[in-house]
Length: 70
Image (cartoon, rainbow, N blue to C red; front, side, top):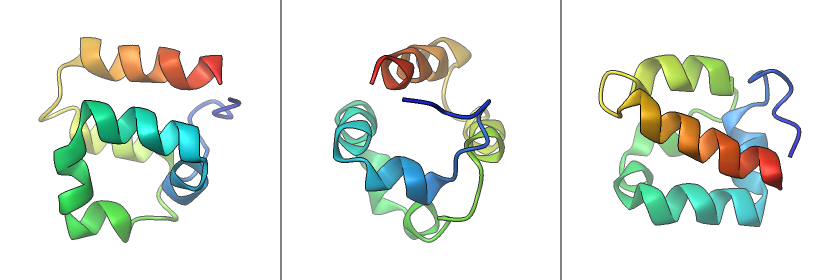
């Protein structure tokens, strides 16, 4: 999947069923937070900055690696 240098939007990412499944399997709690589902226009880059306070960098990199394989 082309993440466009992390400029892909959260909506575009979540609209891809396989990408959504990857994220949901690793972090199902993210889908219980309304702000996540309402942040469609946010870039992946911005989302990474926000979640980095809660998710270890190693885990973020693992997810990005999986998404790039799509």
